[in-house]
Length: 186
Image 1: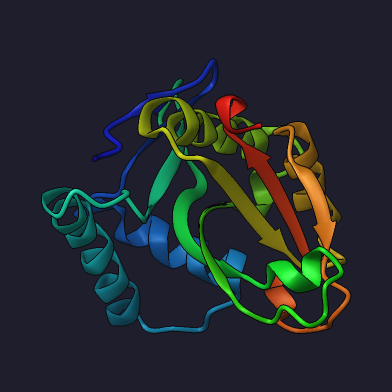
Image 2: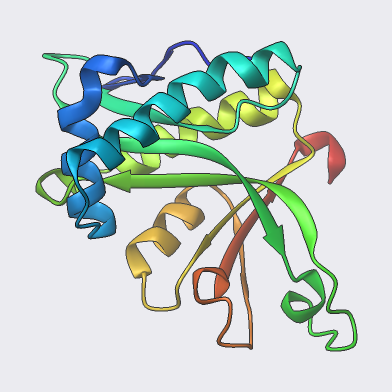
């Protein structure tokens, strides 16, 4: 299992390459507010590139981040990814006695601030979601965010996800969960 290149009307989603170090450093600083040295971003980039190969050899889902760029001109816009995500389904479904976590296939997206509010996150996430459901055959996919991240919640709705709210304050990244199931699993 491997994500090669996905294309939409405006975007190209591709694996990161060693030449993306400056893009990765800028992305990690601007989107995650990480104040890290170049060597730390380089370590993350090597790990990401190695994970493409290693997970494919193991026949595992292609859990990794992928670069998002404009098809026309190749400008780097941000990243989307497939991430292992654990969810407290009991809390999300209002069953407080069920505190067990369940592993799920998660989606991630992040766009550089200068390129936001143009639909790039939804377009890129939609392409990756299509890959997950259609090509990979995932039963379902999820995305998580904080309560005040309205932009990500809008992307979730645009993707056709049902939004579930965690009544608990923690984990902070799992206050709102978007859920979509494969059409044959509904």
